[in-house]
Length: 123
Length: 108
Image 1: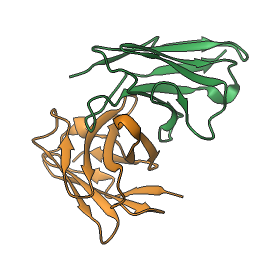
Image 2: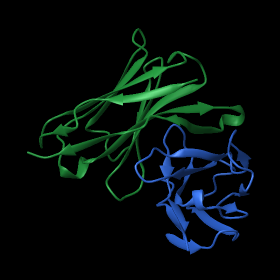
Image 3: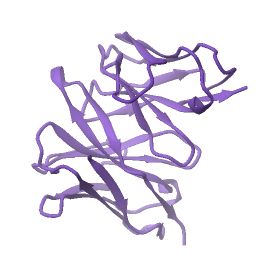
Image 4: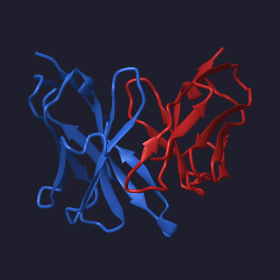
């Protein structure tokens, strides 16, 4: 059974870099037909796609965050990571990783999701 | 960018009621539309993919329909455990994705 688990600091200071890792178990991150993505949710608000990565290392980012985001993969550890630089209080959110699974006709959806991790930006 | 607009933003209904949540895309997205359920403190869970396909393990009282710009999620007989927030998400511009603002469903 495929499972994803986020890990990383729960508190980050303003202007610093937020770093999170998603560990994938139950399947290889190199398996074809999947992208791997990060999504966030500020407290009490909706979901925002941050970016996605293919196992080859190809990445796609939300244009609104692109200048501050880096997503990378470590296939040897079956992990992928998120770095978000120059954070402010507006980056306080629950951060989720998820598999973006592809099917026929390029249909795709996010499943499963990690349980999420709350990151607070505060001094 | 494709914008996704959900309505209503919240609703309250009784157990056994038929409930419908709508989602409108700012441009045509064919059937590239997914629905998720999120309960407080939990990660979203996939309910419907490709507009109308029921994810394995999801109760059959949930159904999705629509194509183009207008979509709907229907709960045929609302149950207490269906109290949650529901999000639509377009996958037409994949890998770039966008979500609707969410609809909170409460039980009267």
